[in-house]
View 1: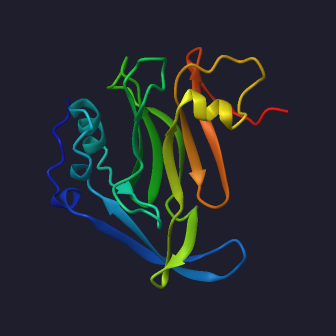
View 2: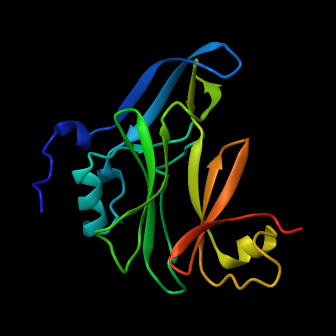
Length: 183
C-alpha cells in the first residue's frame, strides 16, 4: 500500500474559487466549499484511507447546513454497509461507491468538473449544486422509480443537480442502473 499523503491542506477546509462562463454566456464568480475527510469521522478507516490516497476533499452544496456528500447505505444488497462519496481533486469531482464486499476497490459512478453544476448565487458567488443522498426502498417506490413489478429491496443513491434534476443509481446483478420514472 502506498504511503498516505501528509499534505496539511487535506486537514483544513478550503474554498475553490474563480470565474466561469455559464451555458447562457454570462460570466459568474463561484466559490465551492471543500471539507477535509476529518469532517466525516464515521467513515470506516478502509474508505477514509482510499480517499486520502486520492487526496480527496468533499464538495459542499451552496445549501449545506452541515457536512454532506458522504452517505452510508445498503447499496450493494439488503443489509450491506456501503458508502458513497463525492471526491474533489484538481477541480474535478468523482462519485465513488465503496461496497462492503470490496472496500479497496471503489466504483466510479460519474466524474465531472467542479464548475459543471453551479447553483444559486450566495454571498456574491455561485456554489456547487451537486448533492448525493441515500434513498431507501420505500422512498424509491414512493417516487415511482423502476420498472413496474420490479423488486427494490435495498438502497439507491440519489444523484442530484439541485433545483434541476436528479437520478437514482441502483446496484443490481453486479452492475449499476439508473432508475427511471414508471410509465
